[in-house]
Structures are given as C-alpha cells and as structure tokens.
Length: 288
Image (cartoon, rainbow, N blue to C red; front, side, top):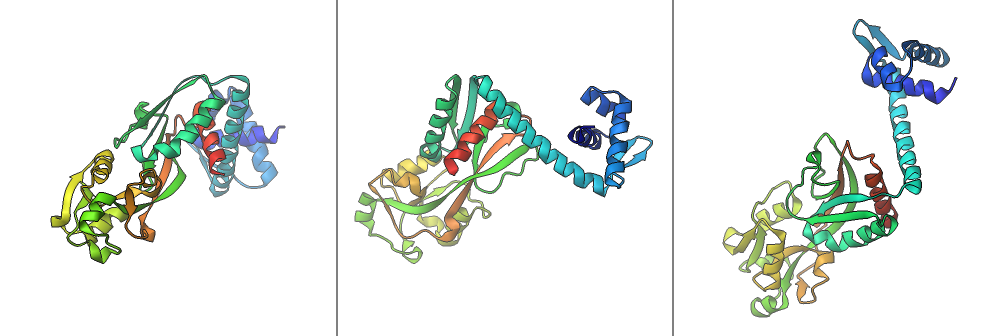
C-alpha cells in the first residue's frame, strides 16, 4: 500500500473529522479510509485518532503526524504549481500593492516577473490604503511596519530598510545643520498626522519633537516627501529613496530602532495559486 496515500488519508480525516467527509474529499469508499487508518496505526504502533459518536479527533501522536503531512502536502502543491507553470503559460491580471517609497525596490522584481511570464498583465498600485485581499483587491500586498496579524492571510518577511532624518540643502542653509537629536529644538519638522507609539519612528517623534516645532502634518507619504523637497522642514525618509534626491542631506546617522520591516502578504485562498507562487519564486531569487 502506498505509504504517502495512507498518510494523506489520515491528514484529511484529521482536518475533516468524519469518515464520510474524508471519503468524499478523496473520491474513495468509506472502507478504504478505515483500512488506511487501521494500517497506519498498526505500522506505527500508536493510536492516531480517538473515535467518538460525532467523528474522529487526532491524538497527540496524530497531531504530530498531521503537522508533517500538512507541510509535505504544501510542498507537493508548490511543486505541482511550478511544474504546471512550465507547461502552461500564466496569463491574466496580477495586482501588487505597496507604499509609494518602495517603487524603486519593487520595479526590478516586477520586471523579472514579467520577463518570465510575458502574458501576465501587471497592475501595480501604490497607496497608503490597505487593500483588502479577502475581497480580491490585490493578489500580493507589501505591508510596512509591525507584522500583519489578520488570521486568513499568509505573511512572509520581505525586506527591511532604514529610515533617517533629512532636510533640503536650502533649508539647512537658512537654519543651520543639526548634528544630533539635541540640536533639533527650534527647527521646523514635517510629521506624520497620526503617531502610533508602537511604531519606533513615531515613538521617537513623540519623545523628541515638540508640538510647536511641527510645521506640517500629513497622512500621505507623498505630501511629506514633497514638503521636504520644497525645503519646508526636516522629516523622515527611507534611505534608499532619499539617495535619489541629491538636494536632500542626511542630518546624522540613523538610530538602530529606525529600521522598518516589510512583509509580503497574500490571502490564504490565493497563496497556493500558480500566479502567486510564481511571483514569490521571483522574489526569492532576487533576495538570494
């Protein structure tokens, strides 16, 4: 008897809880499911399920086996998707979202993805808005900040970037160049409209910048960026983004806590789809 087949049967029984549901899911007879479970328990010499009137519940040993089976099935699903992609070209729309400052990071990935799958039409949306993956507003979202905790999503670490304090050369020519946080008092500051103490950069602003020194607040990162480029004051910006503007000057070395984590987020229903897996393969290859 195929060992993987009987382990797979046990995995489905643990997930579904009844013999009839497992038989329907696998397209086999109820007797086949029972035979697989009996054979597996006999081979391992342990009880994998507790039987009761309403169905089957995995024992501690059964749960241990199911975790391995679940991981193995997931790997098989990814393998099948990769093999399918080699024989069937991917096509149709594919939607990715991120914050605007990540455009320069995302473009090489999007280019490589489109070169490998030219029949796919990319839609790349940059916005502060959190697109709702559960409603199909995006296939993949790059989220920035604390790890997203929505239960139906699959969250994968993507990249991390430092932010630092910058000001325009013209601003510094008028107001001098502060070389430490202690010298920021009296300077004009560009701030985020909503400051959350759990976000390290926001916490730093709350602890170091006086309310009367904030010249402009905005909930739009593009507004903050443009205000800095127009020499309105000092503000935070990703280092990789600021490097694209020679007129911006980094004030002093960033603190360790000013590192921001980005996450690749997909909805659980779409995570194993061929398009999402193909995109994640490109991301992994670029991050090696």
